[in-house]
Amino acid sequence: MAATPLPLLIIAGFCAFLIIGIEQGVLGIFVAELGQLYERDPEELGLFFALHGVGSALVTGAALIPFIEERNHRRISIAALCMATGAWLVSGPTAWPLKLIASVLLGIGFGGLSMSFNTLFVTRFSQHNASLLNVLNATYGLGAVAGPWILTRQWLDGQGIFTLIAIASALLAVLSLTIDDRVPARDQVTIEGTRTGSIAPILSVAFLTLMIEAGLTYWVPSLLDVQGYGADVIAGFMTTFFAWFVVIRLLAAMTAAIFNTFIFAVFGHAGVVMTLALAATGQVSLAEIGFIGAFMGIIFPNAYAWMLNTSRGGTTTGAKIMLAAISGATAGPYVLGWVLPLFGITSVLVTLLIAGSITIFLMSVTHLKAHAT
Image 1 (cartoon, rainbow, N blue to C red):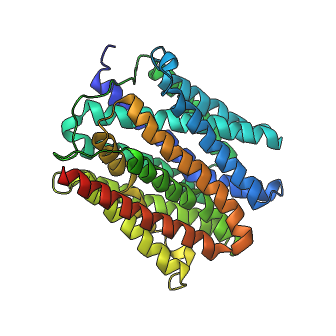
Image 2: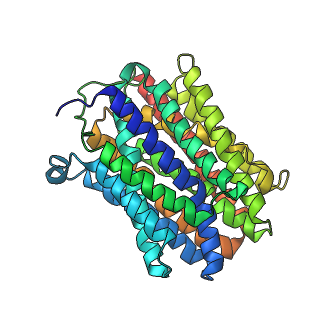
């Protein structure tokens, strides 16, 4: 496998994360609008989000099948084409079943691009992966800020933004034709000089982390809509959320030499838990917790680097971690779609709060065991 030139890898990675950032930034808003347009209940909207996760699981799970993985050196281009097709379907044809198919394709695009470039950046820039991973994921945040901001400016509507995503993704597919993201497992890799044993706690952390992130980014627009807030407030919330995403990830990149990936990830989860506790108890309104993006933004790139290094991972192990994460991003929003009408908005926040607390416990125990060996 020929190594991809670093300039091409960096350019393609930043373009990919800008695209998936825009998609994630507007998806919850757009689906809330679709729910009103098609008169769909929360359970059906939860299915839309779940199918997005199913698509991501498909592309990630394929990396665990040796026959496919050994021959699939076009995963990035295929993922980009799926993103392009899904974006066109979600913005074009009006039939609801086609929107569900679009969700699967968008998920394939999101999962394939995220897994591929995160793994490549961790392994190709091993001496600086925390800094570069945070910069890469800050690009995702920039896209996620840009999407809602464009909506608030009324330069494009949701349909126009997804059309833009379709065009950009098609161009990315061409740019990435020569990029092979297959990375062999490493014989000895440690996290900050330590080891750990079972991968099960790591996979659980991945599941819960993405359950929380997807729960927040997908469902908050709908929760605010239930509370009677208008489209401007909802878009403003998402803009604030992802603006904090960008700020904290850039700060993390600049301070990566001081704080390790474990500290970043645990601090982020602790901030999310405390913020959700304030919102759940009514001390702060849901519309005013956009700053939670600062805590959420610091978690995944650092947690992924910590998990991948701890588990001595290459592409296959990275796929297992991403598959667990995508399972959380699939199951979480779907379950929340049933929790909301049964128990109300507060129960959604409490569910995410509990998931965050469990994640902190699992990470801490795993890290302590790693240092004890």
